[in-house]
Structure formats: structure tokens, C-alpha cells
Length: 521
Image 1: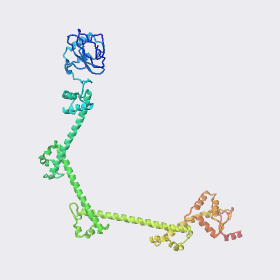
Image 2: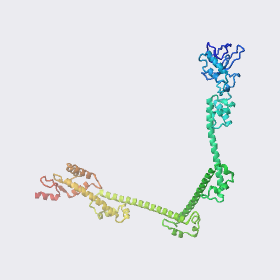
Image 3: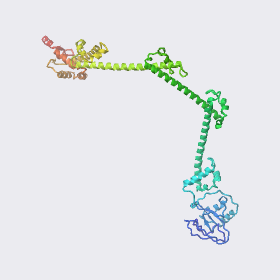
Image 4: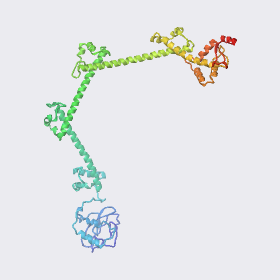
């Protein structure tokens, strides 16, 4: 009976001597294995086995079985491979006597050392309070041993396995995982350190260039070469902060280029300041009235006194040449001209809008008088001039031109008269279609006249639409109303159309002419 695996068999195990008796154990496998003493003085041999269900190792000499490695066994590195192979089935099948002889022969052969395997004893004590603390201790071991990011696993085991902190991680997977994390982090740290060292070396070298080049003999930005100043720079220890000669030369030319750009920026800033000061001087002269949009450079110079000519903002300097002054002056005058033109345009537009509003008010006056009957399409200017001139809207329009009020009146009457003539011809044509006599006198109303026109134009859709358009339009007064008033004032009689006549239209005559026509017939 195997007290660890709980397996029992009638066959004697190969590990038991032929003369020894096997002590039975009552362990059911739930607790630590129990041990028994040998029954005779025969020397027993310890062997190593592996529990397949847990993967843990246990040791047995045929009488005693234990989880703890007995001192009689050699170190784990020197254990025989055959002892593990002899029990790999772990009691899962029956052994034969041939197998026993084979194992005994194998155990007499020299054993090859094997690699140390991890201890998986859960009952082993650990000085760490948590897994995180244990992993940190393991990584501290790697750091203390100066394990490089490129160190192989076998070399790590050889260097660190003798340290107690090696057992902080209890499994091979945890150790390899911790090693991978450590090496990744360490590689990043080393890269950062190397990068910072390069930055510090570059800064030290650049400080050397900044300190020595501006005062170096024979150095001219943009033309000097590295070899011209190398010997002077090499006297300072900071020259050797950068190891590579090519890197030194590149940094030198980068510095020279930056120095050239810096000088150009300084020069541009000084020229800009000189220009701003000159423009401020012109602004003061503009406020004094000595500079306008019509000024020229000679006239402006002649207007300045001696003190103004010697003003530092106006006088010629390395940053302000005479051509610069004339160019800035011309740009300033052009800007004044642009401002003046814009001002005139705005004034002109405002005046144009005001005049348009005045003319619109005058036209409203004419329209109001037309609606009141004071102006007709046949009215002449002389007949209404005095009445129109009394209105407040007349004077602003007259201020635009002496003849402007009359011209606006003539345009108003002419447009109205042209429209009325067209409408009057249409209405005459409609009345000519009447088949009965139709008299327009004081007893005739506007509604009667309108209905008559609609009745006469009804047979023709086009003519009816034209009549409706005339009736609905009042601009400024309905053409129908004007035509009705004209007929009623003349007391016109519309004669019926003769069906036998070859004429298409009837005849419109005045009331006195109607009696003469009837007598003649």
C-alpha cells in the first residue's frame, strides 16, 4: 500500500527489498504522509516520486513515505533521472519482476546531474506578507545582481539562485514573468539615462560654443569652418562631452546656423522698431497739419524745422536709410489717400441716399395730389407749380437742382399718361362691342359702368382678363375711373352696333350728335 497515492496491490513494489515487510499505513491522502520505521537492519534506498494529481514530489524508501527530502538523498541536481522514470506511472499499473531487476540495474549506473526544480510545497513558510511584496523582493535581487535587460534565463539562474530572495517567487512562471517585467522596465530606464546623458553632453557642448565662439579669433558666422576653431574649442573639457567627432561638427554648424538666424532676427527687430518710430513721427506731423494725403516728400521735408529734422525717429541711421524713409513715407501717404477716398465715398453714398429719400417724398406728394384729383394725366406744370412749391418736400428736391422738381413732375405725368392712353384704347374697344345704345351721364354710376364693361368683354377671355387688370390697378388712380369721369363730363352716348354694317365696332358720339344722327336716318 502506498500511503501517499492510496494505491494498493498484491505485487511487491520494486523499491522494497526482498526480505523486508511493508508497513501498512492508514493515511487516506488528505493529510501529510505518515512514516513507519524499518522492521530489520537492512539498508533501505530512498527514491523520488511525483504525485500526478498535484504535481508535487514525495520521497519513499519502501517503508517510509514523506514530502520532505531525506538527507540520505544526494542534492537535487545529482538525482538520477531513472528514479523519476521508475515511478512515473505513480502506482497506476502493476510492476513485473523484470521491471524491478531493470530498475535495480539502472540505479547501480552513474547518475547524471539534473537541473534544480522548483519547490511547490504549500506548507513551506515565507517571510513576505503578500505576493506583491514577494515579487518586489525578487526584482530587488535582480537589481542587486545588476541583471542586464539582455541577460538570458540560464545566466540569471546561475547568478541569483544561491540568494534567499530567489525563493520569493514560488513557481517558475512567476520568476520568468517577474524577470521579463524587470528587464523591460530596466531597458527603458537605461534608455532614459542614456538619452539624458546625451542631452546633458549636448547642452554642455552648446554652452561651450556659446561662450567661446562669439569671442573666438577669426570666427565669422556663416563663413567659418569647424576646423578653423577646433583647436580653440578643444582646450575646454566640455569639448569632449560629445564623444563623436562628426556629432561635434554637426552641432557646431547647427549652432552657427542658429546664431546666423538669431542675428537676422535681431536685425529685423531693430529695423521694425526704427520703422515704427518713423511712422509715429509722421503721425505727429499729420496731427500738426504738416502731412496730408496730398503731401509729397520734397514738400514734407520743406515743412520741417531744424529740430524736427534732427529727431532720432526721423534722421538716417544704420537701421533706417534714406530710401527706407521715402518708402515708408510713400506708403503712409497712400494709406492717407485710401482713407480719404473711403471717406469721400461714404459721404457720396450718404448724400445719394438722402437725395433719393427726398425725391421719393416728392413723388409721394405728386401721387397724393393725383389721388385727390389735383393732378391728371393731362395736367401741365404751370398749373400746379405754385401748389406743389408750398409743400415742405419741394425745397429739398429743388436744392438738388433748379429744374429737378419739374423734371420729376413731367416724368410722373408722362408715365401716367402713357399708361392711361393704353387703357383708354382698350376700354373704348370694349364699349364699341355694345349692341344697344348706352348713355353715360350724371345718373350713371361707376358700378353701372364697370358692370357694362365686364358684360361686353365677357365673350372674349383675353379681353375680359385685360379689363379686370385695368379695373384692379390704381396707379395712382384707376384708368377706369378717369375714363368714366371723362365720358360723364362729355355726356357721351354709345350707339349700338349695326349687325348689317361691315364695321366691327359701334360708334361713340356726344349727346348733341345723337339727335342729328337720328334725323338723318
